[in-house]
Length: 484
Image 1 (cartoon, rainbow, N blue to C red):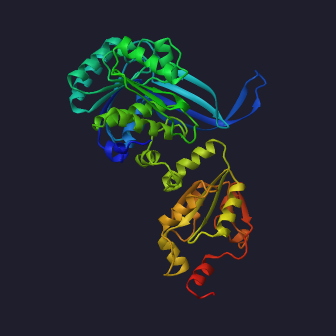
Image 2: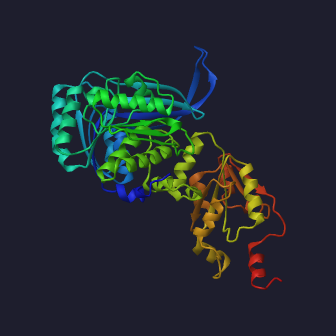
Image 3: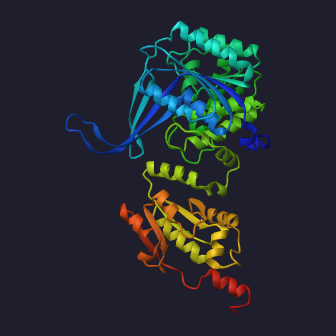
């Protein structure tokens, strides 16, 4: 159950000052089609269609903090190369303080994932994992001493890429303790003793099993392994991320809490651990207790695993995840674009229809069910109140756009609802480029707004059969005694 003290999440975390120190990388995603096997070897041939780049590692933690509205600071190491310049440009687009360190001949870490049909075919890593130079370690410690008295939490993002070593880690933890700043560590490797004194570590199930050399299949085994780490490594609290089984929180005092996952769809788990430490760090910096921080992190992780690539959760998405319901289907145009892009990356066939939907009647329900059967995901464009008045007259709408959105979102056939203020939905159609455009059979194809645009890129226009005897206008007339 949601802890009421955690709400409203976005307002609680806004402005929280968090320092993030750790390994930064560039995540590349190469998308294409793999519809044939190479003649040179029994491997698929990827016909590349597009590429995207995102911040990874500590960069993704920073991005999550900035996106949720916190005030983050970052200390990281990148190369003097094209990837490093790309990282710097991506960071420039985010609010926060950034300190990038460089070493001659040390490349920026790049992880490249090749994806076809919604499946990852291969990942390649370009990296240097040798320990960073002594001058780099000294610079990290110097910048940390400056930052720690100014922040409410320190996140150490250790990906084992050489930036952080045992001595640097212990220096950072000791400096944070002196500043009374809680330390959250996303750990790497099997020796968690290098994080001794940390307030919280956040291993996933496999990482905990390796560190404790114990099985972690059941709740009881996870708790036993976490307690071993607490006792043997001098860690105060352990938050174990367990994929579809949610999270487990184990404290030095013996308290245990298990949270089930809140994910509705799981498409890509890359970067989910970054989201967890970012949200926990922001929550602790905002003065929230550990149980609330854990619940916020669990809700945030449930959202990002449903996105493509290393992702971040938006404030309103976090609030919605904490208060799940049909209103999660109601989105604005920016959210619509993100959701449609994710569905398209999954290979989903996307449909669209629109209307005023002033009083939902059986004819509407039948049309929407028919439309949903013609696609994998159905988006509804609904006219806002002002546009309904222009189209239907000063006495309409009977129901506000918020009420109409809620009713539409409650229908099983509807996947998303987005309002528009124009007289036609053409701008929405051009933004989302649906695979299927549906209108009622009282139209002809040439009368359907957006039909020629959808057909121009190979989309379909379908006319749904109408159920006779249903009309919003007639229903209103009967209610007013005009139609008997």
